[in-house]
Length: 151
Image (cartoon, rainbow, N blue to C red):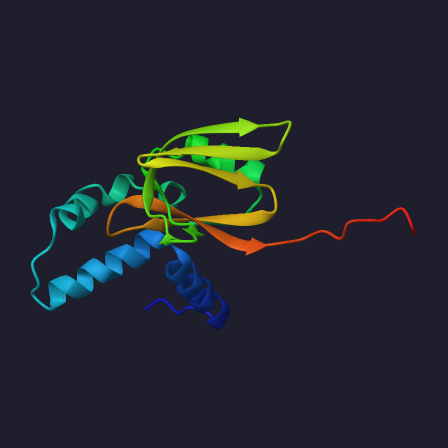
């Protein structure tokens, strides 16, 4: 019988808890134990389980605008813009993007229009297992104090 130290048990627990691949697997196994029918996406996930890397399906938090641009350029899945505007959540597919170094802006071409993101926010990309895509949202907004010449 193999014995594990408490620190090793905690390491395994935190690793399994934080890994999106394991989390999704546990959700599917729960569904199987309840004798629920699996969706096509869940069956596909199980078929490809051994070939899925956690890096392919991880969340990205606290991204600057430039970091967001580079990561979105490398993601090989659909990304939906879920940023809120005056009418509520945009919830539209991003089909193109153009970074402007001079203005520090990122123009996103959406399926039904455009949106310009500015470098005054930190952004997040969250992987959505149910739809096998990413969701883009604002993590936080920040403001810098403008220095006046009277100081």
